Length: 442
Image (cartoon, rainbow, N blue to C red; front, top):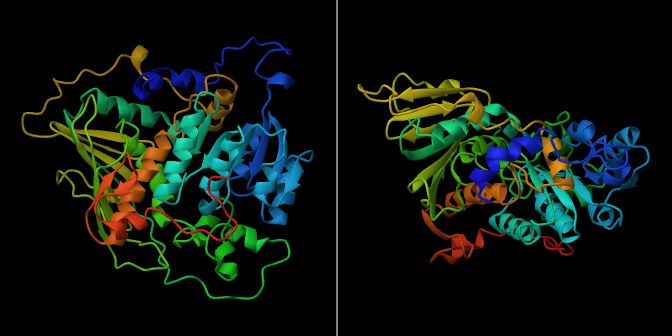
């Protein structure tokens, strides 16, 4: 089923209309039809899943911080507990995993879990390198007929995503020519933090470092409240990709959802001077995307940290939108943030007579709760809005843009082979080096 055909009906599954008999013995809520879930990361984003998974059997909890593990155990007292996710995934009765760990372990957990026949919900970003994105997507595609996956870009559940997609597909801006997304967050850091004391006894710091090169402990990596602590470490190359993996994953999802895109053929980028420790604050990237069966080839761009696309009209002040997307076409412009959208016909003769809005009956249906869509998919259709093919293509595309930034030049990319064409130095940046003992495809 093509993605466009699926999106016409996916809202029914997401809204909870799983076609199962509603009885105690056979219904979706019957004990025999409950998932056995492992929650890996039990604080911060992990806590955000407590409500959605509380109707299932939470059989395992894992966190490198024993205080956070105890926090999760107060909610799910019957679950077995672990500090090492690798040992957690060896528990035989687990059939679904929710991964809420630091960015640099997402692809590892997702891939290991799928290799063990487990459904996976993985918080964004799905990957920290092009190679990670490709490995996770390939593992999912081998198992898509038996596993449900969802990448945690939960803002996707807002109905505005559907309305934006409809406007683009239905020709409200004419023929699509280019797409831009941006975010204004700025968290400058000079370098990795210096060594500062010893980790507290409740924190298994070596497991937190995981596959990344070792950096000495500093409490500065662990400040910030639930859901915001990632802003203490995700800008460092060995732990994340800064805004690309953070709000970039959310905001690019708004831009990506209407495109039915796969992988770029070329990318270029510019920003502040390269820092070998820290990802850039100010940056813009431009990726060439090939044509598909309903649109021509287009340019997809990402801007961050104060960089912005050029406004197509003095009447459009995009500086007032902190995280947004803009779709430019032959007859108009669509500007959106997560909850709102504005359509601007361009040109003196623009009158929208070329565009016919959908009837209420033909609008894309609401998705419902994002986590519940995945849970229902695990029990039935296996189909979600942000599976690891859709999200894998999206994160790989913007990570190819990040490679172009690090290479300092425009690069040509072979998406089928997963390689930079005629540039071995840039090609080497598609992959990360991991510590001994850590395997991506385990």
